[in-house]
Structures are given as structure tokens and as C-alpha cells.
Length: 129
Image 1 (cartoon, rainbow, N blue to C red):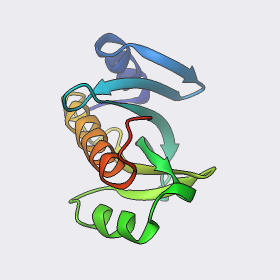
Image 2 (cartoon, rainbow, N blue to C red):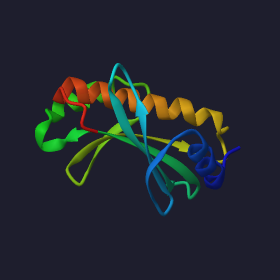
Image 3 (cartoon, rainbow, N blue to C red):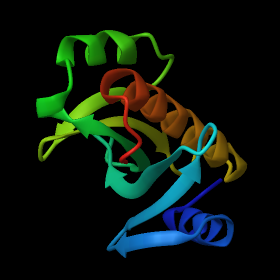
Image 4 (cartoon, helix red, strand yellow):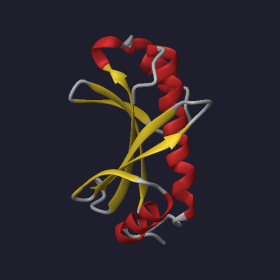
């Protein structure tokens, strides 16, 4: 089962880190065609007082997006949701550390990135994030 240190090493081995901060890593993943998507993973403490890996990927600026459509489209996804962080709409999903094998994170990263990229393309027509 994965700890934050295990996940941190796992991400560093597999992906090129673009930015890092305390308990947070940012990297880029390709999606479809020439498109790519930024993804961030950060250590958070859940309401259950246990460590979680929070995975986010930007969709676009909230001021430029039809928020009702964003909520409807995000609601069609099996996991995750959308949040506003400083005017940026993010697709976000969290995975419990300690309950998940490291190999399960690739699937979670891919899910978040693919949904965020699809929403970005549909709602903005751009590939900025």
C-alpha cells in the first residue's frame, strides 16, 4: 500500500516534474492528438484524518466557462468533481493513501486528465492547461 513518499517517488520516476512545492507535484500528460494536460497531485488530510492523494487538472477559467454545462458534464463521470480554485475550474479526484497500490495511481491520473481535457475542449475549444 502506498505512502506519500512512495507516491512521490513513483511520480518522479514516471513523469517529468514541471513544478513542485511542499507535498505537491505538477506534471504534464499527453491526451489525444497533439493535446496535453497539466495534472497536479498533492497530499491532503481527509475528513477521516487519513492521508489522501488529491489529483487535479484544470479545465479553464470559470469566467470563460458555462458553469451549468460544466457541472452537468462533470456529473456524468463515475468519479471526481469540479471545484473553483482562484478562478480556475479544476476537475478533481482523491485517492486514499495506504489503501491503494501504486499502480492504481496511473489509472486515477489518466481518468482525471482525460475528463479535464474533454471538458476543456468542449467548453473552451482550447488546449491551454
